Length: 403
Image (cartoon, rainbow, N blue to C red):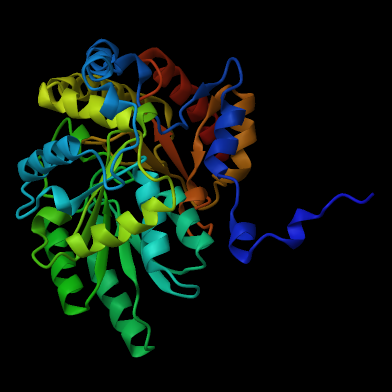
Protein backbone atom coordinates (compact mmCIF):
# COMPACT_ATOMS: atom_id res chain seq x y z
CA UNK A 1 0.00 0.00 0.00
CA UNK A 2 1.39 3.40 -0.97
CA UNK A 3 2.18 5.78 1.85
CA UNK A 4 0.19 9.01 2.05
CA UNK A 5 1.99 11.96 0.44
CA UNK A 6 1.41 14.76 2.92
CA UNK A 7 3.03 17.28 0.58
CA UNK A 8 -0.22 17.21 -1.39
CA UNK A 9 -2.08 18.48 1.69
CA UNK A 10 0.26 21.20 2.96
CA UNK A 11 -0.85 24.80 2.43
CA UNK A 12 1.14 27.35 0.47
CA UNK A 13 1.97 29.01 3.78
CA UNK A 14 3.24 25.76 5.33
CA UNK A 15 5.47 25.13 2.34
CA UNK A 16 7.05 28.60 2.76
CA UNK A 17 8.34 27.73 6.23
CA UNK A 18 12.08 27.15 6.14
CA UNK A 19 14.53 25.82 8.69
CA UNK A 20 16.41 28.55 10.56
CA UNK A 21 19.84 29.11 9.05
CA UNK A 22 21.09 30.14 12.46
CA UNK A 23 19.99 26.91 14.13
CA UNK A 24 21.65 24.85 11.40
CA UNK A 25 24.90 26.80 11.78
CA UNK A 26 24.79 26.60 15.56
CA UNK A 27 24.55 22.83 15.25
CA UNK A 28 27.76 22.80 13.19
CA UNK A 29 29.40 25.24 15.59
CA UNK A 30 28.62 23.16 18.68
CA UNK A 31 31.04 20.37 17.83
CA UNK A 32 33.79 19.63 20.39
CA UNK A 33 36.80 21.90 20.14
CA UNK A 34 34.97 24.67 18.28
CA UNK A 35 34.60 28.08 19.88
CA UNK A 36 31.21 29.35 18.79
CA UNK A 37 30.77 33.11 18.58
CA UNK A 38 27.52 32.53 16.75
CA UNK A 39 24.83 32.16 19.40
CA UNK A 40 22.43 34.83 20.53
CA UNK A 41 21.79 33.36 23.94
CA UNK A 42 22.37 34.85 27.39
CA UNK A 43 25.11 33.47 29.63
CA UNK A 44 23.50 30.62 31.65
CA UNK A 45 26.02 31.19 34.44
CA UNK A 46 24.12 34.42 35.16
CA UNK A 47 20.66 32.91 35.51
CA UNK A 48 19.22 33.92 38.93
CA UNK A 49 18.57 30.31 39.94
CA UNK A 50 18.37 30.78 43.71
CA UNK A 51 16.08 33.81 43.65
CA UNK A 52 13.82 32.47 40.92
CA UNK A 53 13.53 29.14 42.74
CA UNK A 54 12.48 31.08 45.82
CA UNK A 55 9.67 32.65 43.82
CA UNK A 56 8.68 29.36 42.19
CA UNK A 57 8.51 27.68 45.59
CA UNK A 58 6.33 30.46 46.91
CA UNK A 59 3.75 30.29 44.08
CA UNK A 60 3.63 26.50 44.25
CA UNK A 61 3.14 26.44 47.98
CA UNK A 62 0.84 29.43 48.43
CA UNK A 63 -1.18 29.76 45.20
CA UNK A 64 -1.13 26.35 43.43
CA UNK A 65 -4.75 26.89 42.40
CA UNK A 66 -3.44 29.77 40.24
CA UNK A 67 0.08 28.71 39.30
CA UNK A 68 -0.89 25.21 38.12
CA UNK A 69 -4.23 26.14 36.55
CA UNK A 70 -5.24 27.61 33.21
CA UNK A 71 -4.97 31.38 33.27
CA UNK A 72 -6.39 34.37 31.45
CA UNK A 73 -5.38 34.47 27.80
CA UNK A 74 -4.26 38.07 28.14
CA UNK A 75 -1.98 37.10 31.01
CA UNK A 76 -1.77 36.93 34.81
CA UNK A 77 -3.01 40.30 36.05
CA UNK A 78 -0.45 40.79 38.89
CA UNK A 79 2.31 40.31 36.30
CA UNK A 80 0.70 42.76 33.89
CA UNK A 81 0.44 45.27 36.74
CA UNK A 82 4.16 44.89 37.42
CA UNK A 83 4.81 45.44 33.71
CA UNK A 84 2.82 48.67 33.86
CA UNK A 85 5.37 49.84 36.45
CA UNK A 86 8.23 48.87 34.11
CA UNK A 87 6.52 50.76 31.28
CA UNK A 88 6.18 53.85 33.46
CA UNK A 89 9.85 53.52 34.45
CA UNK A 90 10.64 53.64 30.71
CA UNK A 91 8.64 56.82 30.29
CA UNK A 92 5.65 55.20 28.59
CA UNK A 93 2.62 57.19 29.71
CA UNK A 94 -1.07 56.42 29.89
CA UNK A 95 -0.93 52.63 30.02
CA UNK A 96 -2.64 50.24 32.39
CA UNK A 97 -2.89 46.45 32.61
CA UNK A 98 -5.36 46.37 29.71
CA UNK A 99 -2.64 47.75 27.41
CA UNK A 100 -0.47 44.69 28.08
CA UNK A 101 -0.68 41.10 26.87
CA UNK A 102 1.66 38.30 27.96
CA UNK A 103 3.20 36.17 25.21
CA UNK A 104 5.15 32.93 25.22
CA UNK A 105 8.36 34.76 24.34
CA UNK A 106 8.61 37.77 22.03
CA UNK A 107 8.77 35.47 19.00
CA UNK A 108 5.12 34.70 19.63
CA UNK A 109 4.51 38.44 19.58
CA UNK A 110 6.12 38.65 16.13
CA UNK A 111 3.94 35.77 14.95
CA UNK A 112 0.86 37.65 16.16
CA UNK A 113 1.98 40.72 14.21
CA UNK A 114 2.11 38.61 11.05
CA UNK A 115 -1.29 37.03 11.68
CA UNK A 116 -2.92 40.31 12.59
CA UNK A 117 -1.46 42.63 9.96
CA UNK A 118 -0.24 40.72 6.89
CA UNK A 119 -2.40 39.52 4.02
CA UNK A 120 -0.76 37.80 1.05
CA UNK A 121 1.13 40.36 -1.02
CA UNK A 122 1.15 43.12 1.61
CA UNK A 123 4.26 45.27 1.77
CA UNK A 124 6.23 45.50 5.02
CA UNK A 125 9.34 47.56 5.70
CA UNK A 126 12.26 46.25 7.72
CA UNK A 127 15.80 47.24 8.44
CA UNK A 128 18.59 45.56 6.47
CA UNK A 129 20.06 43.68 8.20
CA UNK A 130 17.32 42.74 10.65
CA UNK A 131 16.23 39.95 13.01
CA UNK A 132 16.13 36.72 10.99
CA UNK A 133 13.12 35.15 12.72
CA UNK A 134 11.01 38.24 12.05
CA UNK A 135 11.85 37.95 8.35
CA UNK A 136 10.91 34.26 8.44
CA UNK A 137 7.56 35.03 10.06
CA UNK A 138 6.67 37.86 7.69
CA UNK A 139 7.74 35.78 4.69
CA UNK A 140 5.65 32.81 5.82
CA UNK A 141 2.60 35.08 5.69
CA UNK A 142 3.64 36.02 2.13
CA UNK A 143 4.65 39.64 2.69
CA UNK A 144 6.62 41.67 0.17
CA UNK A 145 9.71 43.35 1.63
CA UNK A 146 11.10 46.84 1.37
CA UNK A 147 14.27 47.48 3.35
CA UNK A 148 16.06 50.40 4.96
CA UNK A 149 19.85 50.31 5.47
CA UNK A 150 21.40 50.51 8.92
CA UNK A 151 24.47 52.58 9.76
CA UNK A 152 26.24 53.56 12.99
CA UNK A 153 23.15 55.54 14.07
CA UNK A 154 20.58 52.85 13.36
CA UNK A 155 18.07 52.70 10.52
CA UNK A 156 18.50 55.55 8.03
CA UNK A 157 15.21 57.38 8.49
CA UNK A 158 15.92 59.78 5.61
CA UNK A 159 15.93 56.77 3.29
CA UNK A 160 12.73 55.53 4.94
CA UNK A 161 11.15 58.89 4.11
CA UNK A 162 12.18 58.51 0.47
CA UNK A 163 10.92 54.91 0.44
CA UNK A 164 7.52 55.94 1.79
CA UNK A 165 7.21 58.61 -0.90
CA UNK A 166 8.13 56.10 -3.60
CA UNK A 167 5.59 53.57 -2.34
CA UNK A 168 2.88 56.24 -2.16
CA UNK A 169 3.54 57.20 -5.78
CA UNK A 170 3.02 53.54 -6.70
CA UNK A 171 -0.21 53.38 -4.71
CA UNK A 172 1.29 51.02 -2.12
CA UNK A 173 0.50 51.48 1.56
CA UNK A 174 2.94 49.48 3.73
CA UNK A 175 1.40 47.63 6.65
CA UNK A 176 4.18 48.50 9.12
CA UNK A 177 7.83 49.28 9.73
CA UNK A 178 9.55 46.65 11.89
CA UNK A 179 12.57 47.92 13.80
CA UNK A 180 14.96 46.87 16.56
CA UNK A 181 16.11 50.39 17.44
CA UNK A 182 18.19 49.66 20.54
CA UNK A 183 21.29 47.43 20.26
CA UNK A 184 19.96 46.06 17.01
CA UNK A 185 20.13 42.39 16.17
CA UNK A 186 22.38 41.74 14.33
CA UNK A 187 24.19 45.07 13.84
CA UNK A 188 24.48 45.97 17.55
CA UNK A 189 23.85 49.69 16.91
CA UNK A 190 21.16 52.01 18.31
CA UNK A 191 18.95 54.48 16.48
CA UNK A 192 19.82 58.05 17.45
CA UNK A 193 17.32 60.20 19.34
CA UNK A 194 17.03 62.54 16.34
CA UNK A 195 16.10 59.63 14.10
CA UNK A 196 13.64 58.23 16.64
CA UNK A 197 11.80 61.53 16.76
CA UNK A 198 11.77 61.80 12.97
CA UNK A 199 10.48 58.22 12.68
CA UNK A 200 7.54 59.00 14.94
CA UNK A 201 6.74 62.10 12.88
CA UNK A 202 6.97 60.12 9.62
CA UNK A 203 4.59 57.52 11.05
CA UNK A 204 2.07 60.26 11.83
CA UNK A 205 2.40 61.88 8.40
CA UNK A 206 2.15 58.56 6.53
CA UNK A 207 -0.41 56.77 8.73
CA UNK A 208 2.19 54.08 9.47
CA UNK A 209 2.31 51.45 12.21
CA UNK A 210 5.68 50.86 13.89
CA UNK A 211 6.52 47.51 15.42
CA UNK A 212 9.28 48.14 17.95
CA UNK A 213 11.12 45.01 19.08
CA UNK A 214 13.21 45.66 22.20
CA UNK A 215 14.89 42.53 23.60
CA UNK A 216 18.18 44.26 24.46
CA UNK A 217 17.39 47.80 25.65
CA UNK A 218 17.93 46.97 29.32
CA UNK A 219 21.45 45.67 28.60
CA UNK A 220 23.15 49.06 28.24
CA UNK A 221 26.53 49.12 29.93
CA UNK A 222 27.88 52.42 28.59
CA UNK A 223 26.60 55.53 26.84
CA UNK A 224 23.40 57.51 27.25
CA UNK A 225 19.99 55.90 27.69
CA UNK A 226 17.61 56.53 24.79
CA UNK A 227 13.82 56.58 25.06
CA UNK A 228 11.98 53.75 23.38
CA UNK A 229 9.89 54.65 20.37
CA UNK A 230 6.88 53.70 22.46
CA UNK A 231 7.84 56.34 25.03
CA UNK A 232 7.86 58.94 22.21
CA UNK A 233 4.59 57.69 20.73
CA UNK A 234 1.64 60.09 21.13
CA UNK A 235 -0.86 58.38 18.81
CA UNK A 236 -0.62 54.68 19.76
CA UNK A 237 1.16 53.97 16.46
CA UNK A 238 3.87 51.86 18.13
CA UNK A 239 3.27 48.22 19.01
CA UNK A 240 5.97 47.41 21.53
CA UNK A 241 7.42 43.90 21.88
CA UNK A 242 9.41 43.00 25.02
CA UNK A 243 10.83 39.83 26.53
CA UNK A 244 12.27 38.37 29.71
CA UNK A 245 14.57 36.09 27.70
CA UNK A 246 17.62 38.36 27.84
CA UNK A 247 17.05 39.93 31.26
CA UNK A 248 15.88 36.95 33.31
CA UNK A 249 15.99 33.61 31.45
CA UNK A 250 14.72 32.41 28.06
CA UNK A 251 13.49 29.11 29.48
CA UNK A 252 10.56 30.75 31.24
CA UNK A 253 9.22 31.66 27.75
CA UNK A 254 7.65 34.96 28.67
CA UNK A 255 7.40 38.18 26.72
CA UNK A 256 4.87 40.96 26.58
CA UNK A 257 3.24 43.41 24.20
CA UNK A 258 2.40 47.02 25.04
CA UNK A 259 -0.12 48.50 22.62
CA UNK A 260 -3.44 50.24 22.17
CA UNK A 261 -6.30 48.38 23.84
CA UNK A 262 -7.90 47.73 20.44
CA UNK A 263 -4.72 45.92 19.38
CA UNK A 264 -4.48 43.97 22.64
CA UNK A 265 -8.10 42.83 22.27
CA UNK A 266 -7.46 41.52 18.76
CA UNK A 267 -4.27 39.69 19.78
CA UNK A 268 -6.12 38.23 22.76
CA UNK A 269 -8.60 36.60 20.37
CA UNK A 270 -5.77 35.16 18.26
CA UNK A 271 -3.94 33.86 21.30
CA UNK A 272 -7.06 31.99 22.46
CA UNK A 273 -6.79 29.76 19.40
CA UNK A 274 -2.99 29.50 19.63
CA UNK A 275 -2.19 28.33 23.17
CA UNK A 276 -5.11 29.46 25.38
CA UNK A 277 -2.63 31.13 27.73
CA UNK A 278 1.07 31.37 28.47
CA UNK A 279 2.31 29.19 31.37
CA UNK A 280 0.66 30.34 34.59
CA UNK A 281 3.45 29.05 36.81
CA UNK A 282 6.21 31.10 35.20
CA UNK A 283 3.95 34.15 35.03
CA UNK A 284 3.16 33.91 38.73
CA UNK A 285 6.80 33.32 39.68
CA UNK A 286 7.97 36.22 37.50
CA UNK A 287 5.37 38.52 39.03
CA UNK A 288 6.72 37.60 42.46
CA UNK A 289 10.30 38.12 41.25
CA UNK A 290 9.39 41.63 40.13
CA UNK A 291 7.43 42.41 43.31
CA UNK A 292 10.48 41.53 45.39
CA UNK A 293 12.54 43.95 43.28
CA UNK A 294 15.01 41.27 42.23
CA UNK A 295 15.22 42.29 38.56
CA UNK A 296 17.19 45.54 38.68
CA UNK A 297 20.08 44.32 40.88
CA UNK A 298 20.30 41.22 38.69
CA UNK A 299 20.50 43.39 35.57
CA UNK A 300 23.52 45.17 37.02
CA UNK A 301 25.28 41.81 37.34
CA UNK A 302 24.46 40.93 33.73
CA UNK A 303 25.61 44.30 32.40
CA UNK A 304 28.90 44.16 34.27
CA UNK A 305 29.66 40.72 32.85
CA UNK A 306 28.69 41.60 29.29
CA UNK A 307 30.59 44.89 29.39
CA UNK A 308 33.77 42.99 30.25
CA UNK A 309 33.23 40.37 27.56
CA UNK A 310 32.41 43.00 24.94
CA UNK A 311 35.63 44.83 25.76
CA UNK A 312 37.63 41.59 25.50
CA UNK A 313 36.15 40.96 22.05
CA UNK A 314 36.68 44.54 20.92
CA UNK A 315 40.34 44.46 22.02
CA UNK A 316 40.90 41.05 20.40
CA UNK A 317 39.41 42.32 17.12
CA UNK A 318 41.78 45.27 17.31
CA UNK A 319 44.72 42.92 17.90
CA UNK A 320 43.93 40.08 15.48
CA UNK A 321 41.61 41.23 12.67
CA UNK A 322 42.97 42.89 9.54
CA UNK A 323 42.30 46.62 9.50
CA UNK A 324 39.99 46.22 6.50
CA UNK A 325 37.33 44.60 8.72
CA UNK A 326 34.95 47.23 10.10
CA UNK A 327 33.14 46.61 13.39
CA UNK A 328 30.91 48.55 15.78
CA UNK A 329 31.88 49.35 19.37
CA UNK A 330 28.99 48.02 21.47
CA UNK A 331 27.41 50.15 24.20
CA UNK A 332 25.13 47.29 25.18
CA UNK A 333 23.30 44.28 23.85
CA UNK A 334 24.97 41.03 22.81
CA UNK A 335 26.63 41.45 19.41
CA UNK A 336 29.46 42.91 17.38
CA UNK A 337 28.79 43.23 13.65
CA UNK A 338 31.72 42.73 11.31
CA UNK A 339 31.78 44.03 7.73
CA UNK A 340 34.56 42.74 5.46
CA UNK A 341 35.51 44.01 1.99
CA UNK A 342 33.09 42.86 -0.72
CA UNK A 343 35.55 40.26 -2.03
CA UNK A 344 35.32 38.30 1.24
CA UNK A 345 32.50 35.75 1.14
CA UNK A 346 31.65 35.01 4.77
CA UNK A 347 29.13 32.40 3.64
CA UNK A 348 31.68 30.38 1.71
CA UNK A 349 34.24 30.95 4.48
CA UNK A 350 32.10 29.46 7.25
CA UNK A 351 33.18 25.83 6.88
CA UNK A 352 36.82 26.90 6.71
CA UNK A 353 36.29 28.75 10.00
CA UNK A 354 34.78 25.62 11.58
CA UNK A 355 37.83 23.66 10.39
CA UNK A 356 39.98 26.22 12.23
CA UNK A 357 37.89 25.76 15.38
CA UNK A 358 35.69 28.87 15.38
CA UNK A 359 32.11 29.62 14.31
CA UNK A 360 30.07 32.76 13.67
CA UNK A 361 26.71 33.61 12.12
CA UNK A 362 26.50 34.53 8.46
CA UNK A 363 25.45 38.13 8.02
CA UNK A 364 23.53 37.23 4.86
CA UNK A 365 20.98 35.37 7.02
CA UNK A 366 19.75 38.75 8.32
CA UNK A 367 18.95 40.32 4.94
CA UNK A 368 15.50 39.64 3.45
CA UNK A 369 17.08 39.46 -0.02
CA UNK A 370 20.04 37.31 1.06
CA UNK A 371 22.65 40.02 0.44
CA UNK A 372 25.37 40.96 2.93
CA UNK A 373 27.59 38.02 1.98
CA UNK A 374 30.64 39.87 3.36
CA UNK A 375 29.21 40.39 6.86
CA UNK A 376 29.09 38.32 10.06
CA UNK A 377 27.58 38.53 13.52
CA UNK A 378 29.77 37.83 16.54
CA UNK A 379 28.30 37.11 19.98
CA UNK A 380 30.23 37.78 23.20
CA UNK A 381 27.78 36.68 25.88
CA UNK A 382 28.09 32.89 25.77
CA UNK A 383 31.84 32.30 25.85
CA UNK A 384 34.43 32.91 28.56
CA UNK A 385 36.73 35.90 28.03
CA UNK A 386 39.58 33.46 27.30
CA UNK A 387 37.56 31.68 24.62
CA UNK A 388 36.44 34.99 23.12
CA UNK A 389 40.04 36.07 22.62
CA UNK A 390 41.09 32.71 21.21
CA UNK A 391 38.06 32.53 18.91
CA UNK A 392 38.76 35.98 17.52
CA UNK A 393 42.43 35.05 17.07
CA UNK A 394 41.46 31.98 15.02
CA UNK A 395 38.98 33.95 12.95
CA UNK A 396 41.53 36.72 12.43
CA UNK A 397 44.01 34.29 10.88
CA UNK A 398 41.40 33.21 8.33
CA UNK A 399 40.29 36.76 7.57
CA UNK A 400 43.86 37.84 6.92
CA UNK A 401 44.10 35.07 4.33
CA UNK A 402 40.90 36.24 2.63
CA UNK A 403 41.62 39.98 2.70
